Length: 294
Image 1 (cartoon, rainbow, N blue to C red):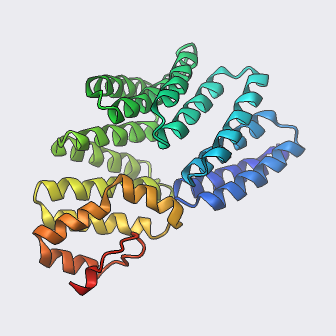
Image 2: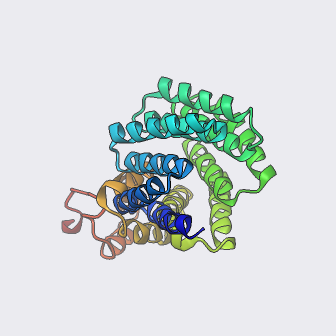
């Protein structure tokens, strides 16, 4: 019992580092846990670590290392005949291709994932794969397919009651609402995400997602001309972003279009803009224009 407790504890610590945007530190911790699982000849623990290392490399935008680790994880799970875990790894492989905007292979791996998971009783994992498939259809402007998959995803996840996956599905669906400029629906889903995080008291381990949630809330309120709220939520997102390494922070900034937010605020609400930029370090957001000299 004691032999597995230590690598399990390190694994959980690594998960928290990952979710807070400290992906390189998470990789180091997962690798330490991996060594201990190897000493204990725990193949399931090894495969799980390999998968999470791959996910962290994807966050770091090191896609070759991500795919290498994920394929190693899938091979280990195949030796264990663990269909659900293989399906989850296939989803992560699909997401690596999605992050690189390689949509055909992304959808191919996500379809493999949903096929495997549909043969298990894990509705949550199937639901999250359907939700990620919806992102591919959203990116390729197939909105009706994306909407249908998001609805199916959330239904499956709620049937089994997984707070983390429900929050993830709602956040992904909110991005579709943003693309469609349905800001009221987007804001409703984002507050539901915050409610889930608050209810389960996991705010200290969800910095990366909270940065995304508040960044989207800022955009929604800016478009609705609720400028005071927009600035407040931008600053909340910024507080989480500045705790992260730059290579983890930048994809979130791009995803939330935070530079566009500042440009729009500057053009249309200059007084609020000047007040805002005096409270932030523009270098953290990687903004090059001479904002403070205007």
